[in-house]
Image (cartoon, rainbow, N blue to C red):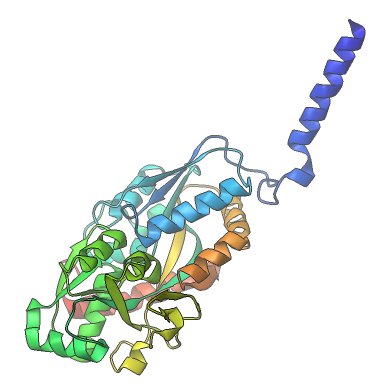
Length: 339
């Protein structure tokens, strides 16, 4: 009996040592605070779009590399142009088990509409990537390049339909910048997510969209849409050929294509609710830093032709302030600011 009890004690002790061995705990988990119950990743967009893919990629990396000991559940709350997710963040004040995934829409939406949250209701954790944007059209379109598309838009006037994800959000802002740079007028048609916009363009229900690479690549691979130019100072680096021997690096910049704006991108951001502690913020920042150093993260950036970005703390807060001020000036000229 004593021998059995001793053996059982040794087994339990070994199991406990294995479970709490510092060598098996990631640096993030070794901090003083860590999640004690399932974590909710709240996505400020519908399924299939870039923000949804962003959150689910982070979730998959965490699970694959066992960076957390609690489950991570992804919840899409894309209502109200994504404000549903931020309102949920506001209602979760003090709860570090709620992590909100968005873009610059977190600070842009309060500028253009009365929403149920303020920027102070959320704490910025990190900006992890910058999405590049392309001008896309469907394969049956009569124009062959970006100049031809702009010429058609000028001829059609407001009958030219530009699809985008949400109203007065990033795609809509880029559409307004295209109009301002080229002197054309377009009708902007909002959908719930970039994934839905991709389907609508592939079906010929809109004339063009400005999706990021990941949102339209499946339709391009299937021969239903084609890219005309990228709103960047340089061509995309990914060398993969996607359709008919054409790949990302073959797409001209919009500057090369003769249209503007020359550059436009969007940060992908992660937030905690207000009234979470500095230790909890540091935990999530550290964990996301680990995620971005994995091969899976690098592969996702390359596959989607996104730019690496890592902004935290004062640097991230400065980015938010500067972009918010510039956007306020633009929105005033568009007549978007609420009265």
